[in-house]
Image (cartoon, rainbow, N blue to C red; front, side, top):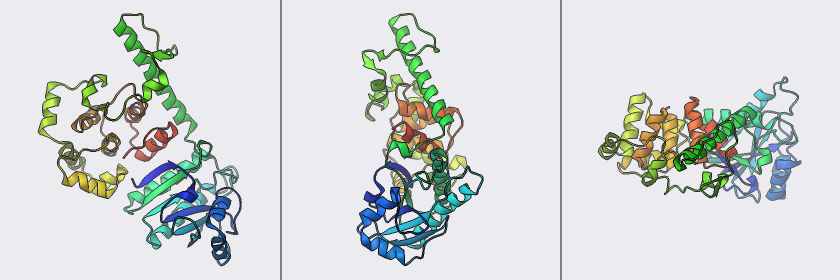
Length: 350
């Protein structure tokens, strides 16, 4: 995938370049800066001394010393002063200048920390939004680059509080629906959605319900869990047209080019080429959903595209519920969806 959010130590990323959230001296400091200099060894500091510092919002590049990457791109983020001192523009410039340097030095992969979100105090949810906005826009312009946003731990990562709360509430509502359906199936009295769902369901804890289904179990042999069971006509259509054929037809109908579609889906060009060239290509479920998001398919058409690949959406799977939330709310931004999936410890799209 062109843009990935990963939990890792940035000094261990095996990419062409890592980005250092440096201070203006470029001579090392605390946080990510200190960790990178420590892992890189004295060679990095020697090179940095020759750069004569760096302005806020700008970026400079050096070798990587003892790190497993080829280059370190040093960029100086803004100190948060409340948001009224041009901080956002400077932070955007950090990402833009770093990406430009990565391209100039022919890097095909680069890893970023969340710049300025540590001791510089930039609010983490806003810092993440800037990072994703700038990087995704850069990739959608046609640049072939794999970019990682590297998060060391959950404390360093935060999506917007309102979005997180809305998704949490939506998930909780579906827990209640699952339990109520089971109560009705058993012939027991159901309870109101306003009441918290029971802590067990058919002998299972609620967290285990959400994660009990493997990708294999998500296939059509358990399609009874799908809220919209396929009709006979749907099943016949599945025989008549493969996933690859349906996808290419949907792309043509959308008016998008192939490149526009796979970039909006956050899909690698090589993977798309495999899908296009193999009529019987079997994609993963996240890949199918990524294309549905790129094509802005409604829930019915998303289910149909999933069925072509042998998958279904389930009301008892947290990943599926989050996808439904975004589709039902008309939000087809694959990068924002991946932010939310990461925040809820789910597999990312594509």
